[in-house]
Every structure is written in structure tokens, then in C-alpha cells.
Length: 268
Ligand SMILES: [Zn+2]
Image (cartoon, rainbow, N blue to C red; front, side, top):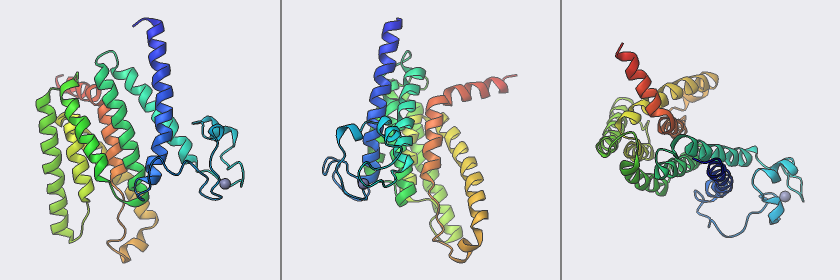
């Protein structure tokens, strides 16, 4: 790639990434409560004042206003800033890792990481994974099967089937043993869609990573407020989708490196 071309691609990916990140904040807030994405325009949740364009510039406005509403001074959650920054970095990473190998796959990676970002925060807030995000991931997954520069379509097809079967199986067994739901239906559909997206090799890696991360974090959390939850069993359900999403993203971006490093270790 020529320098001029490279710089242009990165600048566009960064700008577009941060703007889409800003839009994701709206999606995360409005989709679960059934509000329209376009109407009303962005406003302060406290005083209702509509944001002017200069108060609505991704990243910059938050810094200039120091995280406060211009008219009433109410705190604006740092999360808005974090989501914009995270989405920008994920889009830059997509370009960095995949653009030269396959432009469609770089786009797929960027779209996927944005959707996973939404899924994580919506699950954190509302303990649900809306179907429309799973459908988007499934469609992107079908495209990934054709454009993946590392694994073929058969791997992706198997990934979808294994994701569905394994998570449904785990949920079924858990339900039989504990008598209550451990994995939600949303998690199962999410695993199937991401299996299709990742291929079975990366899926395996991500499930491993998600389980380890979840048991560490949830172990610490449940030890901290453990006694309360033991009494009210069933209500102490922790969201699993943020762990799954983070692991899916990790596997999407670095899976082929991790897997080939692991395989080369084995061949010694
Ligand atoms: Zn306000």
C-alpha cells in the first residue's frame, strides 16, 4: 500500500468508527426500550435540553464539557465516551489486521465488533440479547464464510452447527441438574451466529476464553456479594453475553494467530 492510500484508509476508518460509535450509544440506549433511533434527537436525560451539533461531536464534546450537560450540569456517563473510543479502536484494528488480506473481511470484522459492543452493553443493562442483533451477526457470518482469508466455508458452517448444538446442550444439562436456567436463549442464538461467523476453530478458542474469564470475574463478584445471592437463588443471574462477546471479538481478531501458535507448539 502506498503511504497516501494507507493514511487515507486509516483516517477514514477512525473517523467513521468514532461516528458509528456515537450512533451505537443511541442504539444501546433506545433499542431495548423500544424508542425510535431517529426521533427525538439527542437530548440530556436530566433536563431534556436538545443537544446542539457542537455538543454532540464524538469524543471531543465530552472532553470539552468535561462530562457534564451544558445547561443543567448533570453528569454524562463516561460510558458514552468509552463506547465511541472503543468502536474507533476496533475499526482501526480491523483495518490494521485484515485490510491487506481481504477488504470485505476487514469490513466484516468492523461491523461485527460494533454489533458485539451493542450486545454487551444491552445485556449488562437489561439482561437480554435482542434478536435483531443476532440476525445481523448471522448475516455477517454468512458473508464471513466466503471472505475469510484464513478458514474456509466448511469451517464456518460447522462453527454455526457446533455453536448451536453445544450451547443448547449445555443449557439443557444445566437446566436438568440445577432446575433453573443458566444460559439464556439469547446466549444460545448468539453462540450459533458467532460460530457461523468465526468458524469452529475460533469458536472453540472463544468459548474457552469466555468460560475462563467468566468464571474468574463471576467468581470474584459472587464471593463479594455471595451470601445475598445464595438466599435468593435464581435472581442472581449474571449476564454472560459480555464475556461471550469479548471472547468472540478476541477470537475474530487474533484467533488465527493464537491457533497457529498453539499448533506450532504442538508440533515440537
Ligand atoms: Zn441537562
